[in-house]
Image (cartoon, rainbow, N blue to C red; front, side, top):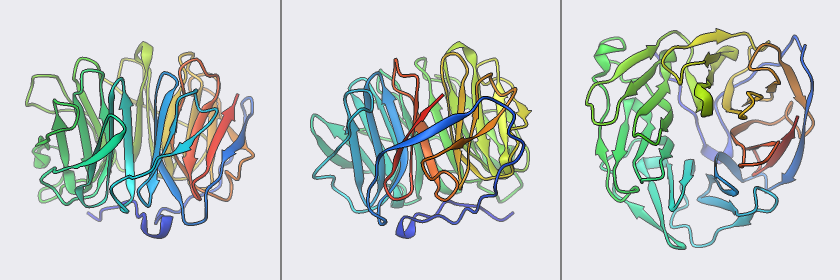
Length: 319
């Protein structure tokens, strides 16, 4: 089975998207709040309250402390490699990227952490106690219990969930406050490992790769990926069902508000649903039809989502 892996060389990507059809819901609009150079790229964004971090290439990290009203580029990031995932929770901040790179923030400084892998790391998640999970190429799954100071390989026995000899790329990760880990990736795989357990449970399997997962409050969750794939969960990710978002684009990121307004980023496409996935429309403005956007999140108390992507751009999506 051929693997599909996001490429970050030159701030570009190998994923090609298609234009969406079937707009039937209330509209949302995107407004640029920050634009970098053509050589910049932002792949991930994470918020905890009004504090947020955005990360990308080359070794590019931005920070906001006012709910995304203003962003400051951080200096002395100890890498020129692309940072493909970032997570912030409480006092904990971790970024991951190419060649098994993990950076942990200690005070105002970032330091490299040895992970024991050279595989590209694509996503990271951390909870308020410092338990963390990072995932990436060829089935890589790493866990930390100390805020990212040390890491242990915890990848599933992949032959239980995929074709023999296959180690699926894992693109998305989530760890909740109890320490339960959820991961997603190729073959529409969604797996879960409860805190304190060594066993992985299969929650979903299919054809399309899944590139992002959002598990929010109230038990509502979303996963998105290839061929316009949108999955929704109403039971905190225990079960998943397909949602028709009216597109065949490659979808790269997803965020949902507490009242279940959903925004999905992708390749030259961005979709919005005001009603938990029942109806959808294209987001207008902000170059969403000509550029790619990937990471997306929402600061606490904000009515707008923030998406990051090509050319170091940050978009505010009002709905």
